[in-house]
Length: 139
Picture (cartoon, rainbow, N blue to C red):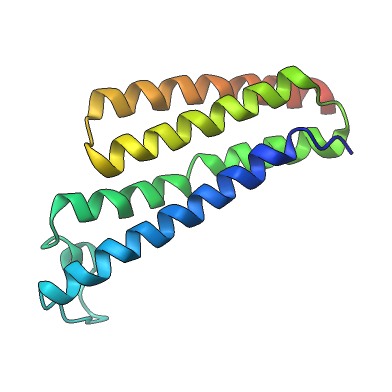
């Protein structure tokens, strides 16, 4: 099994955990300050809608890291198991991870949607390249 592509997989998983910590490090104090009562009958969006945007942005980004990157994990692991990965594939995977980390930084700190969208599109192109490579490896 080729392991060049596994390092970016672990890096993105680690980054997701960093965002999880950052999310709760900002969210819990904000919830306490706002005196939000945890009520299971109230939708979570209603509970957190009173939080400041800068607090919500971290949670939004964490959720984003649970969405599209799941495709990255599947593709990278497919390439590793198939044993067909090379330096170019690893470079594409690292580019994807770097772009997703940059996307997190933009969303969590300044949340300029045009910049976030650009980073999302470019990272999606990396993901598409990995998908083509994985398809070539297994079909």
